[in-house]
Amino acid sequence: MKELLAIVSLLFAGYAVSAQGKEAPAPATIREGAHKLSLQWIGWGEKFGAVQIKKLNDSTYSVKGEQRSDDKLDFVSVDGKLIMLTPRRLRFEGTILTKVKDMNNGEVCDRTGTYTFFASGVRKYWRLQEMDNCEEGNTVDYVDIFF
Image (cartoon, rainbow, N blue to C red; front, top):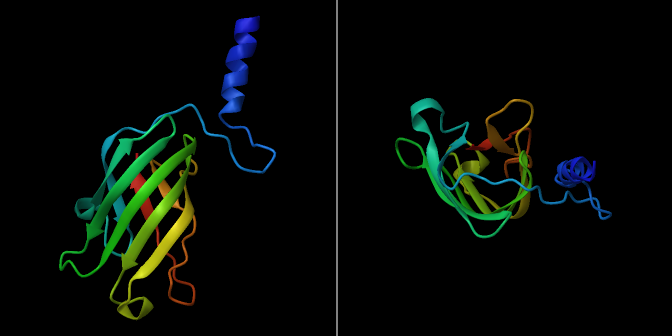
C-alpha cells in the first residue's frame, strides 16, 4: 500500500501547482538532439527548420536553432533554455526572433524574456503561447518546436 501511495504521489507531484501559482517541474525528459522548428509564415513540410536541444540538468535544456525561407530573408530563430514544467508545458527563457517581409514593416520582432511553450490535445509539438507578433493588429506567429 505504501508503494502505491508513493507512486500516486509522484504522479501528482509532476503536475502540482505550487503556492505561488507556478507549475512544479515534472519528472520527465526531452529527447536531446535535433528537433523540427517552424513558423507558419515560412512553411511546413519540407521547409522545417531545426533546433538543437541539450540537457543541462534534470529539468533544464539549452535550445538553439532557426528556420529560414528559401530566399533566406524571412526567419525564426530561438536561443535560450527550456525548463520542463510538465511533459506538455515548457518555460522558455531567452530570445525568439522572427522576421517576415510582409509583417511589422519587414523589421525583426524580438521576444526576449520568459515565455511558455505548450502542447495541447494530441499535438506532437510545443507551441509558443505568447503568439502576438510585434506588428500591431491581429497578427499572430505560430512558433512550434516538435517532439
